[in-house]
Image (cartoon, rainbow, N blue to C red):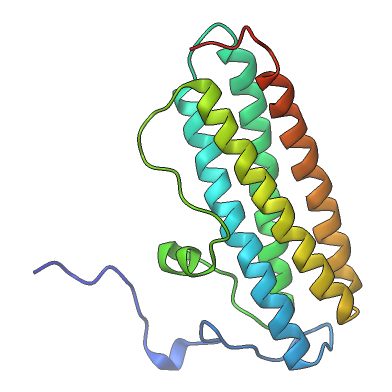
Length: 183
């Protein structure tokens, strides 16, 4: 029998249990904070999934334009990583626990995880665009929730992230518009 894959320190070491909302530094009502945290964790799950998908496509890119696309995918993955940090820190500030680990990511995932196979560059980029589109919708929903409870800092963070997501999707759409994109 294999050893359990989760490390669980003593309960005395626990500061905040997954799925709970504690005191927050922004003085948002616990119910309002919980709603925002739930939406932020959906965004975080999508960011994790898309980050890993974009990185996989960077690792496996091939073809005439792959070097230029690899550079773009690296930049996009870096932006996704930075945005993940921003949202995770916000979840913590709101009194929650940022989604983490495969089980938490799957629980909140707004999109499907791409199979582990390697696909053509064109198909990979199309999958990335679908991921960006899903993430944009998820961010818009989270902006609406945060706005409804007057959490302006979260609205600003999400709005900035949404702009980056839309710009990166547009960049990929331009590559797909190139008939010369081959593997």
